[in-house]
Length: 441
Image (cartoon, rainbow, N blue to C red; front, side):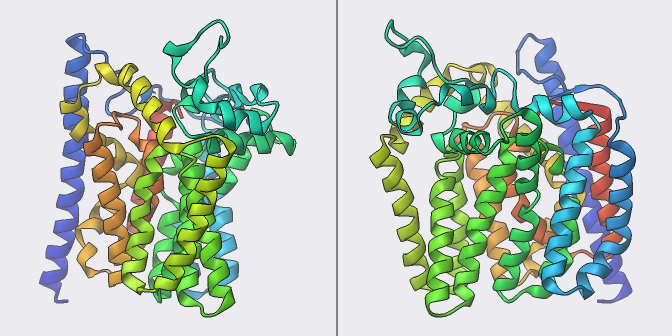
């Protein structure tokens, strides 16, 4: 590319970032006006679920050090390191970044209390004395309007708003001795921060190792880490990502090992459907993967794994469609009723921009330059976000809810020149959010 062409491309990147910033400003201004007009959109700092509270904390110095280290040496290390040590290093750096960001709010407020509030999963773990009974009766405790003398309680907000797989994971953690807010929070961050490796494994299995190495530092400094630590949606993102990764590995193998990887991927994807109803849109990712590889045997074996998990939950007494029907009822009667669709259908995009960061925004402008397999994955993630947005079932809080799709858009960063500058921009945004705002999740 000529100097003129390079300069034009850079200007295009800057314009894309400025347009995204303009969308954020517009959503903030309109959101404030709605609040002033008496429309309770339940956001303290539109378009995010947060409060303006400049602060520092014990995680501040370490977060800055991690950000500078990854920006300075990450691209070179990712290009030269052996593959397996690179993945382990990326997971470690991603966990350190996520944990340090959480610790900006302090250990108790930033980690322990995030999963133990009256709306969170750990609140209902003591109610589960029998997994079989919980699954069999789960749907009976979703609708708050159906409480009768024989049924005097219902699931808390997040438990009832999701399939039982999410609660089941926290019950298992509790049985393993990781039931408190601190241990469960660390476990969630450990799994959530591994999504960076899952995306890299997927790209490498698709024959794009160079791209995977270029993308990995951006996955490590993902601004969405602000909400990965600690929210269950970060765990959901990694769970879905590893399901896709195993399926990608299956398409690159032959024989029994391919079938085993495909079955494992299918089992993870099937369980993902029972972590969050919204993850049904995550099915676009394996579909994009199969469209790129055309490995239909892997598709059939993976589908068998999905069916096995769905059949197991159904046999245990939970029918996915019944639970979803109940959730639509309670969602319509929740705070979503006062959140206007006409605002959130575009303000949601401003909110998720905080999780994506300026590098992803600029990279998406260059997305046609990606190799076809990576391009299809990024387009699938964007399609999932768009469908979730248009559905009206995601009004606000999408900076965490859409993490399972957002982690895949980072692949677009592999097209960016001067990666260190963009990495600093990503880290700067995350540090600004966590030090200027008090996020709920």
